Every structure is written in C-alpha cells, then in structure tokens.
Length: 205
Image (cartoon, rainbow, N blue to C red; front, side, top):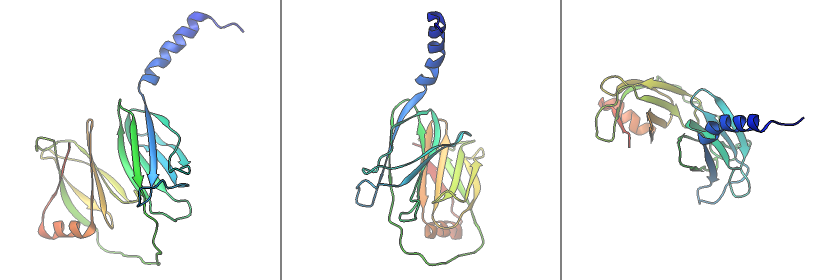
C-alpha cells in the first residue's frame, strides 16, 4: 500500500509534542564505596497517577539503559531480589533538562525476627518557600525508608499540617509547583521533636 506524503506529515506533526515533552533519564546504583552495584532491581513509578512504568536490573557498572520520561513527578526504587542490599527509594522531578540520578545502597546486615509495635507518633510539619514564607496547599509525602507505609498531606494557610509518623526513620518530601524538598529524619530526632512539642520545618529551594 502506498502512503500519502501529506498523511505522513500530519502524523509526524501530531507526534512532535509528545517527543518535545520527553526528557532523557539515566540512573546508576552504587555501593557504600561508590562502585557500581550490579544486578539491583530498579523500579520507576509515576507519582502523577500513571503507576509503575518499568523495572530493570542494573548492569555490571550499576547502570540501567537510558530512558525517555515525560515531565512529571516520579519515584525510583532500588532493591535486591534476593535481599543482599537495603532498599533505597528516591522521589524526583523530570523537567526540560536531562535527569541523572545516583542511588547509594548498603549491603543488608544479618537480621533476626524482631518486631517493634507501639503507638503511632503525630507531629506538625511546616513547609516554607525559599524566602522563608509559609506555603499553602503544598503536597507533603510522609513515608518510611522503603515506601511501604506512606501518606500524602496538604498544608494549610500557615503552611502546616499534622502528620502520622511511620516506624523508624522517616522521609519527608514536600512538593509545590516545580519545587521538591526531601529530608530524612532519624527516629530519635523525631521523638525529641514530639516530646518538646516542636514542629519540623522543611524549606523549598
């Protein structure tokens, strides 16, 4: 069948906006020494409602094949299928510039069957902009290190919201427009904040 030149041109023109919004994405997984970590499972998910996009094992240099991603908010998860490394999770933005992400994972220590159960802690978190002013309606993600227990919140007119803390160290990721601030806070520090009635302040840069 012969293709009409005009129809081919229309099809190409319609496809251009999709390619224009695509940005190259490269990811490397390294160990504690900075060397590439092979055979780590990398999972990339959209946090804009598109779900999981792909999963792939790192090569001998700890890299995954380069991908094109549409602009948006994403999460990368690096984990070992056989449990030889700790899971590392990172939220990131894709905009016009190419994204190069490096995830550092630690070798898993030997673990016993220990379960710690206790009451949930709650605390207030405030999100500020670069000028130090409260940010209303900022999205705040509060999760554990492996992103198993996670909740989304929205700040009030004072840039504040009360959150429930998952167990262990907690990752806070504040998102507002094109700004993303990510902070990891150890459990002892969080308990100190709660005991003293302090709020955690996260500033967007």
